[in-house]
Image (cartoon, rainbow, N blue to C red; front, side, top):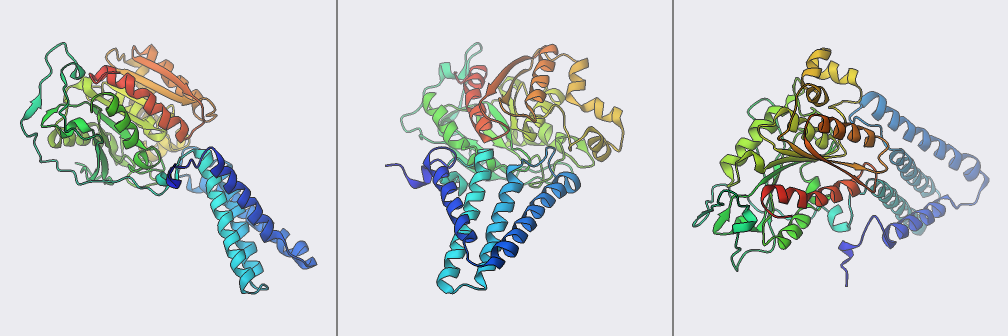
Length: 432
């Protein structure tokens, strides 16, 4: 029997039931006798909540501008509906007795859950209740622990999968840890997340390839393990490959949930230095990994996808390949003018010197591989992704194009990364 924690929050009966219950709760909150209720309370409350929702959207998109793209319409709509449910419950509270007051409070809570469910369905962020609860288990990362008997040697011309023989007591799951990765500059990142596959626990430990993986914005390194269910998918890959999978490090390229320093070295933070020098240096010094360039990949979703594309172009000596999941065509704070003003003091030429599309126009990258993944219904960034893909081809990269069902959401990002694992494994010696 399926655990309630594993029921889908995106497809199937659960979101339908939640929506129906939300509608029924809304009708119950509206239901009341009396001319004043229908001529004053309900219309005034509905108008006020609609104005609030529109006002929030305008402030976020036009004034605050924390994200490069506008808020999807579903967010202010759900906000307005939820607030209306609360306002109606409060309005009924004054005239109802305690049993009805309790029912109104419950109805408002159901409307709230229904609104959150609507937003979650749009973004596809939490596929189950377990992921919504953020129940990924972490263990301490013992970076000082050496392998018990030595590191597995791979002869020239062979891949790791050709010489790897797993011990009988190899764990069936990898481990997830949270650990700080310090910056050498004034940039202050939040702790990173690290996935070590089952093979890393072997006494004769293999030197595994590295995947540096980035969240979107807004976001945290935890997102790939909660919403992205990363550990589950990597464990599944490892089971098919005798415990082998990449070591995955998810550093913080934002500094805070809504910040966007754009993975550049600028007054907003020296994030390019962090991702091109500090993070790789920390990984090489603390973990037993394959240090050759061909074993290193950088990937990310949305703003993190843009960053992965940037680092593949700006630090090709570090990262041999990249996976860009729904990234933008260039680092952006919403418009080119806003970006140049905030990060380059208005110097357009300085921006062009580091902008990856401009770099690709003047430099070839025949030794870089990549994958660009776009949502088929992503009206905001699909065309950007296609432009990035074609620019990479012209610059001599070995790059693949993947278009998946979905929009700018976790349906695309989860499946995009999972679909890329065999491609990545073939190129890093793990097997496809």
